Length: 198
Image 1 (tube, rainbow, N blue to C red):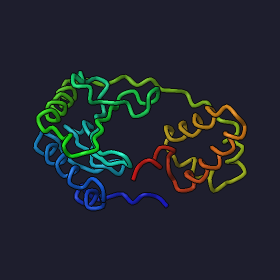
Image 2 (cartoon, one colour; image 1 turned 30 degrees about the vertical axis):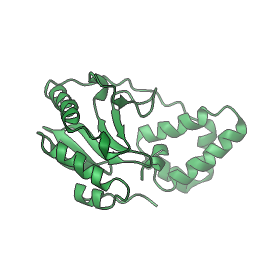
Image 3 (cartoon, rainbow, N blue to C red; image 1 turned 180 degrees about the horizontal axis):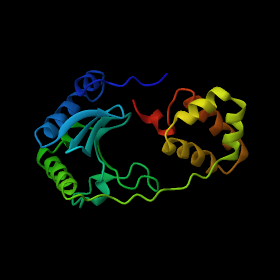
């Protein structure tokens, strides 16, 4: 079943069971700055003059912020991590697991730097990766036309993730189990990494 897109940040937070208070605290900080709040990709997203600056969200093991051009930030306090090393080029996350980690002044400093970078037009130059098709995945999709149709509706990035996931398996048995798992997610109209989103 596909995830239901929240219509507002209020709705997103109201549906949160684990980190509700923390998300409200972070939201208050972001809304005190020169950012516009909206929903994008199922999450609250904060923009400046139409450019994505920072996102807010919760996952299975943490809540936090992600900076769309975080790779350009100084990160003096070493708060930012790359969610997918080797894949994610620009975005960086600030993960937290308790409200005591919410340092209002430090968060404002980081967000202001991200806003200033956006105003200055700074942007990570993304290297486009060629999709190396997985022959095993292609064969599996040819046998399941419903899954094939669902796969074709996914973004190129999500398609690439599935191809890479299967290509990176060394053993034939691992490839088969990864294909079975992938087909299940594809039929739910999910990307490989959407499973980690609450």
